[in-house]
Amino acid sequence: MRSHTPGRLRLPSPWATSVSVSRAATLAVVLSLSIIVACKTNTALGAGRAAVPRVDKVVVVVFENKEFSQVIGGGQAPTFDALARRFALLTDYRGVAHPSLPNYLALVSGSTQEVTSDCTTCVVSARNLADTLERAGKTWKTYAEGLPAPGFTGPTAGRYAKKHDPLLYFEDVAGRPERLRRIVPLTAFRRDLQAHALPDFSLVVPDLCHDMHDCPVSTGDAWLGAFLGPLLRSGELAHGIVYVVFDEGTGDAGGGGRVPALVVGPLVRRGARAPGPLDHYSLLRTIEDAWHLPRLGRSGAARPITGIWRRGLSESPSR
Image (cartoon, rainbow, N blue to C red):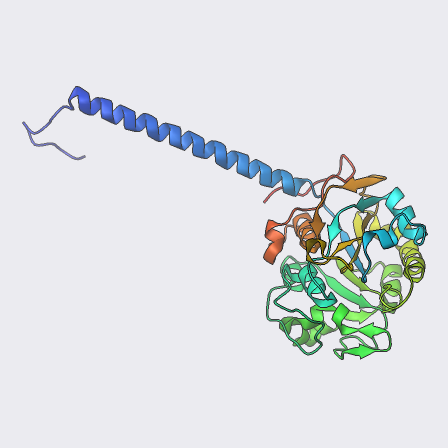
């Protein structure tokens, strides 16, 4: 116990007491305001995360180079229109750049990685969705139509194009054989579905005709109907989501044009419409929040996809 020297103990004057009380009151007010702000911030963040439901499976299908009006509502894509009525339509979803490759990189890493072309020999050294999924104990595959063999890294093969296969551009994927084996031909998707062996995350890349890059909208629309039918009928999607998006349009809204985007599956309200604007970073953020993954790049500042989910779902708590 600290002792005081006799005769040295000084009682505070009334003025000093007043100052002390004033300082204490000011400190209390500041602390109270800080707590209120922190609570409001945490509540807002928690609400944003809780708005995304828990999921078991995520499938992302990426089409090519069409504006919203070229696909939705014009009668040329009956599968897309039917899915928009039955599930959810993102009415203001945008690409983030031109040409294709930067959009794909943004979707799996939260950044275009300063890539401004459809290069086929460029290499990116950055964190990506393969990294964060694996660290969280999640599995993943890319299913690329026309890919001649698992892990093929060539620029093209028939109607397959590497520029639409983004994880091949990341050094820590392309340089590791065990990861390259997870980039497989699309024919493996049907086998995995029938064997109840789909990974947690699937990136599905149609070929240059079926993704509407080189062929009419009607061709890609028919392909989507044939692809989704078995998946929607299977039990694999009971607690899963399919996101159907386009990499870019022909306009410049958001940097890459306003493009069609659907969210499909039993977790989605019938006929739901998501407020915008949304983009590839928003989609990445939604996947991350559903699985409590760390946010990559610009996904941290992006809005997740909300307002489309069925009520009463088990939600991902805030972290």
